[in-house]
Image (cartoon, rainbow, N blue to C red; front, side, top):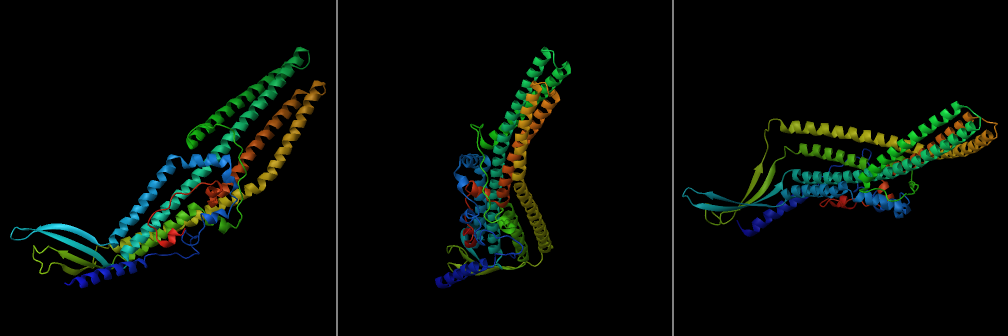
Length: 453
């Protein structure tokens, strides 16, 4: 065959392979899925418009960045993304010419080398669809790593919140024990002077023992929080941190808030993958046409130096494999759709709860703060009356107890307020941007629509 005819044959093969790639992307309706990276940018620069980024410059954000980005899971994230990129290249290789060399022995006993070039011309878009499937899977792996990074960031924030809370609770427990210890001294002095009763002395010492037990428990709780800190940040805490208020979303519409959720976007891509697998299973019956060039270097039986031919592979009967594969793909698609809807409801509930918490926490904090101030006044008044002989021990004990309860409640409510604020950013995926944490590198080999994200 003439050289020009061979070149035309290969050119047709390349064009056909390129055309079939355009059929591979299977899209779901916008009413089913949130936008993915290729459907309008909801990350990167766009996320910057969703929150105030001044928090990213604080020492608190620097600590979170250090803990999240230097952990072993963050280091392993790049390997998963590299593997996903390699899977794309594996599938793309089927669209390229395949060259192989073999040797055969003819009847005369002579060894004949054969060089073969095989290029797919037509397979109904099956190979291109597999490339698109791997691209979507790579995007899903990327979103999975972003979701994992977001979850680890919130865990790091919670670690700091819990440590600072337990440290404040230990300080409060020690303060309460000191208050009761002072009462014991006062009761003993009055008893030695002939006032009061031994019952008051014993009761005061019993309450001091309880307070000291609370101190021991607070020390244990703080040690536990410190151990979690070491696990998350790789070393013990070095200094006390002020936990800043989390920035609010500039837009609070529920749909907008959930649009950037890494977990929801990951499941959206899982669902897209299942749809593509379903479409791919329908292409299993399509014949494959390949252009084949062979040469035996004029040492065998070829009449020409190069032989060109078309190879056609048409599946006729494969034991019901196609039907079973399609049924399995439909089942996986339905499972993915159910998981997506379930997660969307879960995130909507979590977002509503976090918002309700942040809406009411300030009112509760103000009320608790007033309670602390009033109980402090009540304690001072009770002590003064007791020293003048007008009050009794029970009034002082009740005042100390109520003050301790109010102060402990205030500490816990402050930590829960911070947790709820950052929980909203964790649900919507904006916690990374707010704290200045860079997402992993995107997979290599995505198509143009994905690379725009």
